[in-house]
Amino acid sequence: MIDTLLETKQQVLVLEAGAEHTKYAEFICEMIETAAKIRGTGIAKRDPRYVAQKMIENKAIIALNGDLPIGFCYIETWDHGKYVANSGLIVDPNYRKSGLARMIKTKAFVMSRKKYPDAKIIGLTTSLPVMRINSDLGYRPVTFSELPKEESFWKGCSSCKNYDILQRTETKMCLCTGMLFNPNETKNL
Image 1 (cartoon, rainbow, N blue to C red):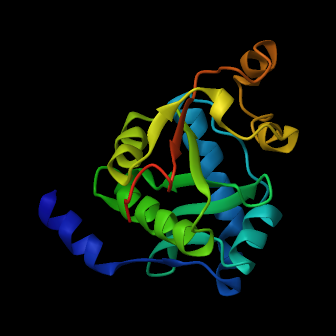
Image 2: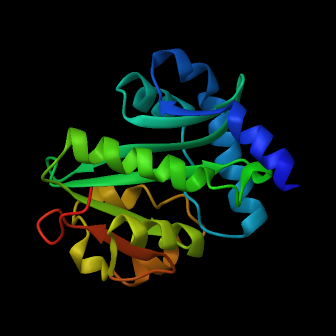
């Protein structure tokens, strides 16, 4: 298994997505939805047009093995660039536990810092591996009161199966863990 994984990693490209990658948008959205169903977690659905727009804006990271998309993440800004979210992280099940998620998240983090150097970078997740990656990048767990207040930010959670919890608590808590990287608190990356 390790030898196969090493061979596979040599074929994998992790790069900033551009307009030429929009042909993968629908496939990526299907990957996200399938992963949510399998894991039984509350991953919000994404629209292929939205994902394609992130690629066109050069605000996405894509992992490819040849012509096959095997991972993805994009960035979104909130509160006039005060916050940046690294969202929609997905890794093909055949490539999990290979370090690919870390490579994608790190590249998205670096992209976020480059494009929005003064922004706080946020993430919402139920995934322990993603929490570990975020922690290694300098994020810390926070209460939801430290996240954007914009209604449009929370609307992104509306397709999650746990959205009713978020609504009942007036966006004060849910099953996700909120994480935040504050460039004013640390000198990380």
